[in-house]
Length: 181
Ligand SMILES: CC(C)(COP(=O)(O)OP(=O)(O)OC[C@H]1O[C@@H](n2cnc3c(N)ncnc32)[C@H](O)[C@@H]1OP(=O)(O)O)[C@@H](O)C(=O)NCCC(=O)NCCS
Image (tube, rainbow, N blue to C red):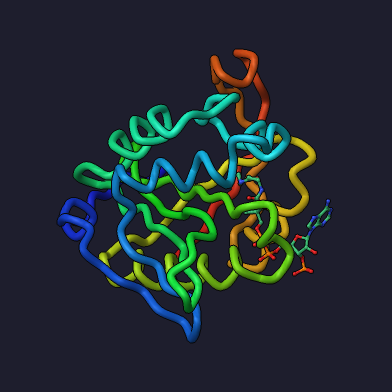
């Protein structure tokens, strides 16, 4: 995969992104309590993520957040017009300069187009930072995520073998690539 390292990717994430009643602001460790409130009972949802444990505590979520919000991490809280926490989305952790894109939306807020709208904001923001390619991975059967990625313009790039201890170890996922023009 072609390597490039846009300098903008390593600037601190201070961006606030907005689309109508939807706001994305930088995720902070205190948001761990929202992860717990929305995800703690959602075993099936957590099983679709690579690095969130189940069961999930606020402290474990804080640790997850801290690891993803350092240099090169652009991860956001997704909020509605009242400031209600709906989920999280972002990109970072570049390998060979290609950031990975990931997200979750609380069960009560799914299938309303929120991930798709938030995703469009994230992709536009990545573009503004100089990112020209992003990758995402889905576990087999995650049709909702597959659809979100397709709506954002990601192309199916075939299977990829990973080792995710929290998801049973060796797993084959689907890789998706977005060329940002
Ligand atoms: C994936 C996820 C973020 C999608 O969030 P969302 O806000 O519901 O997404 P959207 O509403 O923008 O789009 C979801 C699409 O999937 C469709 N969908 C939902 N469940 C589906 C299913 N079981 N089979 C097929 N399609 C499904 C919806 O109808 C919608 O498609 P449409 O716009 O063509 O109607 C959410 O389901 C989630 O958090 N899942 C658990 C964690 C996860 O999977 N994270 C991603 C890891 S790669």
